[in-house]
Image (cartoon, rainbow over all chains, first blue to last red; front, side, top):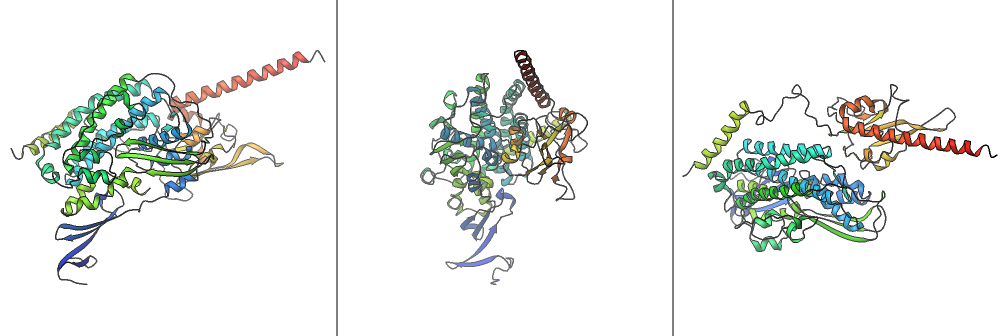
Length: 382
Length: 189
């Protein structure tokens, strides 16, 4: 082993690259900042990143193939475990696809409840992202715990409605499992009214903070062209200034009834991505207010055959999940199991640009770039 | 001014820190296990079997129809039908095992059960020193009384009782109608 640097531990590789001595470091798979089991092989010149190779698949659990051996309904609880922070939107995307495949309609009230829990899930996800992003920047503890505190209030609502905090398994084809009570709606209203105060507090705590600005502005800049070419979706794309929100372009479910704006970034750096989430939370609040005002009474479940056998055909359903475009592609051959089941995970596709974003920055910036992409390894590896 | 943002942030932290001594809303944690029960009424963790009355085996609602066994996505339920001395199948399970290490608490067994027999328990303190036998829940461990069900999920239990009473009423009505039909047809013969 070449010991010319003198300080590198023996198991670290030291490679020659264009008459420079580079250090090859494996970050992960058990690194606290990787938000799961994920490994990056980083080639370093001093502290600057020359090359980065991501390795994923540590959490692979054969989700797609398993789903092809199960009935359509049995897969529903497994979709919770894709992106385990926002299980409701995963349920929603899957239910939407099966409804498309089997021509199932959804009652009005169920659509409203879906929008309410979908937007609450967006709050949960963005709050976690913002908290963990600040945690990655080095403010360990306090801002993250404030975010978790508010998230827990929403998870309490989820538990009240569905029985579980995170693995909700709440949506059904053609509706939802259980109706929400008036008390639930009242406490949801209360939470929605109180939430902007928390966001103001969080803004005061962080957005003007000099350390946050100097660490994240100009770091990990993603250009518009590259973002579109790489198929990036969700807040990461919008932070680069591309106006593309499936809630507006597709207006799936009943999103065409709500009046809301789509925040856009200007520079596409980490700070834009961070601020965009904070602004999106405020827009979610306006959607929630409208939905809670307009929610009608009535049925929550349409008639669905107990054994679902869709006609042979295919369907692709997609929704704007908090992380981006979450799509499910199903092919039916007329039996009880799907012939082909495929997930289009926003996390994985957003993660593919990690190398391009990181090269040229310092090693410590990798962690915040990685944090600002917003991934969940459960969805990346499936 | 440089440093202003940090000072503002520190103000927020101070407000939260001192606020936790004054306002109950800012104090968000409870001490476990002595800090009281924070379980929601609807919370679910692992299935259990309900029995009516005093005797667990005689009052068992489960009829071993095996619908939950077939519907369970991770296939953690194992049912074997009970038989009498002559080998005739009885309407109750002899073996009803749930592997707690496999069960993911999705509540699908509860949804498919037509006899209001299997419900979700909210007990989450399932840790054991014996991970093989300790996490294999057999029939005796799963059977819990209707009183317990009423204690943990009052609304669900009441709704379930109402549905069962309605079913029983309809059955009695049908029986009475059949008997009346029979007695009406008898004199003509």
